[in-house]
Image 1 (tube, rainbow over the protein chains, first blue to last red):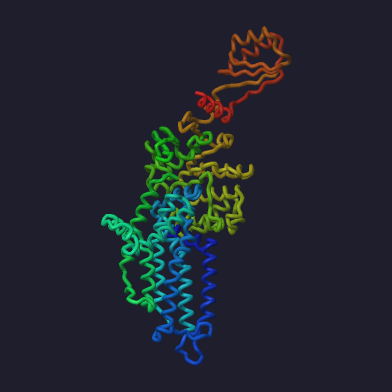
Image 2 (spheres, chains in turn orange, cyan):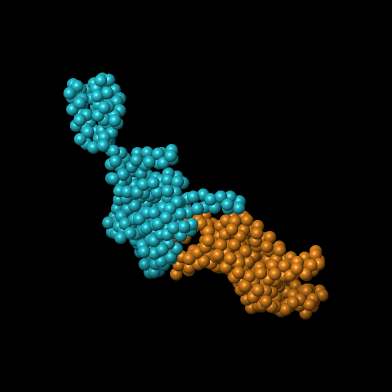
Length: 279
Length: 311
């Protein structure tokens, strides 16, 4: 009851934030754009048109056009969607810690762990509302206008929301320690870059120093922190195989499982830190 | 029975880059508050009043010492179910209306969903915000937010109410209304713990006070006992007192101050007053008027804190 009270409140606070309202408007613009762009060829109902022109790829005549568009759209946008999402809700934890707000929250019979987790889940749920709106919108447009109801694309939103929830663990601990939305965003964005680099550590960081200890440290850091890039790449693979990437990897749950552990560890550390602070 | 009892409650804050420097916010504070009374905690800025309440509600964590609130040790969640708290600088989500704010805090207190709306409405009526129920709190003035804060603190029908500067920013009529609410709550059995700079208000409603200075309790007691330590009389005379009479009076009474036709006498008991009047009348000086000056809580507080700081 108390946890859900705070959870509901956080969703409401997230949705009412100016940045999230702005994202909602941007998403709406994209949806309008796609609904105007996508259509059928009047001569051949099986052919997809974009602004009236038939869509075909010269080198891949057998290409599943809708799947191709959805994969490209998904893989090129989810990373930025997550970052913009973080930008929109990074202030929730430092905002909770402001004098006058935290006193009220901590004076209620709500454990600090419950309070923190309700905020984190509320922020994720708030972002999820926006993501679901966008993904369902795209799915409906392709379904209604192109006749392709791609369930893989629709289900990929679950993986993106999951990736966001794991990634938010970085923002939560950064927000608790720095008590600043700006610093939390900076740390989260830096981590997103590092995560991308760690994903390619064998081809990138390993080459900097040929030392097994250094390599194992990089590996440890990779597995102990949420694997944002790997999760997002796999969320795109739910839609299908990218025809432009030869030998592209198959979908795997492993990054999601590793990230569950690392996010749990980070949320655990956040709770430990939060419960030992004076406000 | 005590609603609240602390024994040697101490709080040190660690500051500095390496957190090696200690600042003592509270030092061995031992206070007990009886159930169903209004207790006032006084002290200059930075004395540790807010820290004391924060320790009791586990908003800050004590360095040493023990405390029990309504029979529960501090840190137990069950304690907070029966406590209400109005912090000094409270912020409410501006996107919520007054009614929604109270419903939200009711939820955080674990009140049943079915009762929340009615409870919120009745509290808004109690604090005089009935007509503002559907207005977003971002449009509220400081005084209105203070009233809403009081309603928020009462949402769970607390047995113990902590109020930190409850009338800050409230107009005189509003202050009177808040005082009346507190007196009504007291008569219903609620224990009220009041932190305030407004000593006149404390004097009006508190049964007992503690004075905190630099984290140490320097005095605890019933207000009437604290303020009745000295009897001061202002005597208006028909003519100035001659030097001979001054000397004669000074031999008998050591705390006399002469200002033209005024004599201010600080006495240990009322029998000394008759002796002064007899001496004056025997010298042919008439008494035109006489008023008793009672030491106000404010005077007492200022004298005490100044004295402590000079030591």
